[in-house]
Image (tube, rainbow, N blue to C red; front, side, top):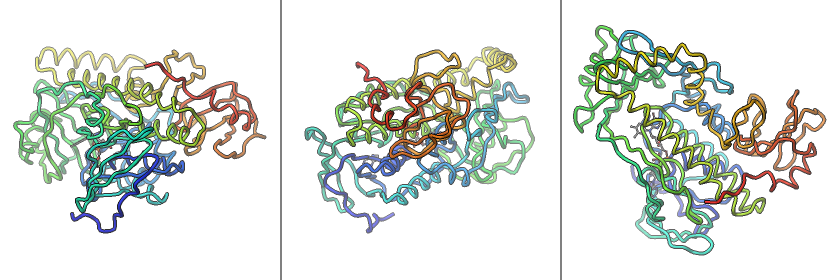
Length: 485
Ligand SMILES: Cc1cc2nc3c(=O)[nH]c(=O)nc-3n(C[C@H](O)[C@H](O)[C@H](O)COP(=O)(O)OP(=O)(O)OC[C@H]3O[C@@H](n4cnc5c(N)ncnc54)[C@H](O)[C@@H]3O)c2cc1C
């Protein structure tokens, strides 16, 4: 596609320069725009790229997307998946449904990444923001206290953009990360995978659950997609994208035992090698990394894009708080401190699961399946799995859960309704239910002590004063602690 002639050149100065308008960059830009933070978002491409790619949105990401006004329209645009299933060729080993999860979104939202990006972009534009398309980030030099970035425009002209902060949301081969010198350690297992989004002539494929078929022949992931499609992921025969015949053979060899599943259409297909990597640091001075630029892993659990959106949610309110003088610059150090362990844990979890799913020894595979089937009957196991996949267990606290409020833990919007990107004071007394600039007050009957919830939905403090003005005056004491790195 030719560069859009309507894309104006970006301004030469800004508070925040965001490189990359994928899901992470768009979520960050929409959040900053909603918060009134001056920023520039550039992308080397001329339009949202086609393709399903990350085709599942998890409940925790939807909770954040609700804060920036995108969740409802995505729910309208997608289909609701029930959950997750482990299956051998003939029977279910373990079935985990999201429907009992404590969230306004107790389902996996099946929607293509293209649709997600299109709705994020629409929201950004509704808020008055835009993407400067056809602009490629080339590098930066320090320009105290920020950076001077060099950007090539669609006309080939090089421009300099001075920014107080630079955020690399530019994907797994991030030029921003490379320019900072931040390492991206990890590994890329040898196994090449085939991925195909297909249409079939049969009812035999799962319609509600992302299903891992674990048989003596090996693993096959079959997941329903929006619009009646299915995604199939299995080992590739070679570097070429799988054909309809090859996908049908994979299904026949490893999928549900069923006659005559015919692949009537291959909507998209490719091969990929999983990379399991986490950036050494998520920030370096005024430069931050978010999304795939900061972490990448097997896409099989449908977690990557979701984590990137939440990186954006963690960073956005902190940039706003610092740039508006509400918080000291040290608050930004907590971005790495909070998000790096989440990414490292995710990579370890998906890697461990992938190893189990791809065991080659049939005897070990048989034992694995028996263990999964036995685990399914143990109380709490399927709840643990769904909570983890839905990312509802993620938080920034090391306190054990004793049923009491924990600073840094997620606050369910079912308990304290969200209030966009404002701080929220939850009170038992109804007479304080009103709006204050920068702070929403919510009436939560039966609350034992007043709660203060961060703009990204985590508990900032409990036992705070009931007067909104007092809370606002002392907001700095409720910020996450500045860690030593
Ligand atoms: C086939 C496939 C299937 C996948 N399936 C899943 C799945 O099921 N679940 C899941 O969670 N994830 C999946 N993923 C991964 C998912 O697509 C990524 O996690 C997600 O796109 C990351 O979002 P991001 O915004 O961090 O980066 P990206 O989406 O990679 O966006 C980066 C943006 O930066 C721009 N950019 C890059 N360099 C520059 C530069 N120098 N200057 C300007 N702009 C630049 C690019 O044009 C791009 O728009 C899949 C990926 C693929 C390829």
